[in-house]
Length: 386
Ligand code: GLY
Image (cartoon, rainbow, N blue to C red; front, side, top):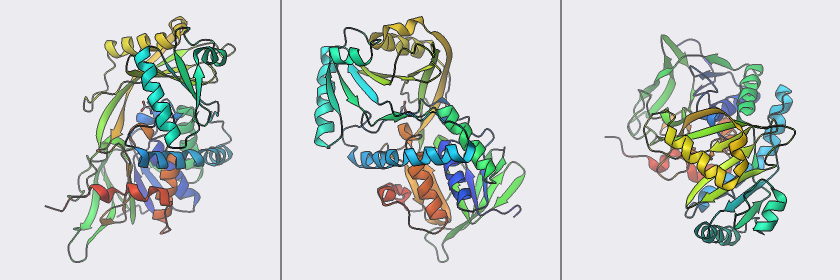
């Protein structure tokens, strides 16, 4: 097969690009296969790096992972900025969670108790204190939680920097869809199975390591043996971008609102843009923007920050998160020698990029991966070959 690389990454989103960059930085010859690198779910994502404000009951194991990746973010961002000379908009301004009625307040009290029981750093705020911190928040909010350690990154700058850094480190981009993974042999048989490369439209690319990082499409490639196909599905998220005044921004930090049982988030950018998201919809591979979703997002955002209605609506878009059966990613080796998975990141793809990339780069080089990723090996879902 020609050409030959040390590693091929299928999928050029935040996870695939971070992995490719890290491997190339370690001296490997890497290719990325994606018809439109950087333009999938990562392009739509708000970029909240919020392991504490987004913690969910029953997902304590995932919390250990998201916290570990959050700790890697400052150095990861600094190295990426040093490699590209560009500012990726990594901001450490914290996150505020606010509740708008008594039911939401009870929910946020429960969340606070849960966060405290896990030893997380969070501060309970009165309504008055919330408005001192963020005067644009609605006077009617009942209370708030301040999570100083939950940060954000400007996703489009992040993805653009990854594209530039990867190219600078010699990564080759094949702007084609990957159609199949080439596997020799079968898992569980004498001799086992080994990956040989990837088939694209009209091209065959060879490598001893293939990283499947195609988000919710990761299960769609031909050639994957039974038991290796990742159980990922698309979870649609519709999201809005509003344009505001950079000199007089509406918010100084990310605000997550609990509005009659629903959740809405507002993420301010340094240029005055406000990102408002996001729906959670099981609609298959549909990326239609619906009037109902735009209405509901703006209705809930307005309950939290009334001034949003003064801003210009500049974009409404839908992205597809790669959901997995336990809401946690699948990162690591498979029963096919050389075939790595890096998918299923669901709501945490941007946050988990540093730890995932370091895991992929370690495994591709034959090194020990970060211990925090061990519970998230893809083989936890493996079924016996039929
Ligand atoms: N992490 C935010 C979202 O998935 O909408």
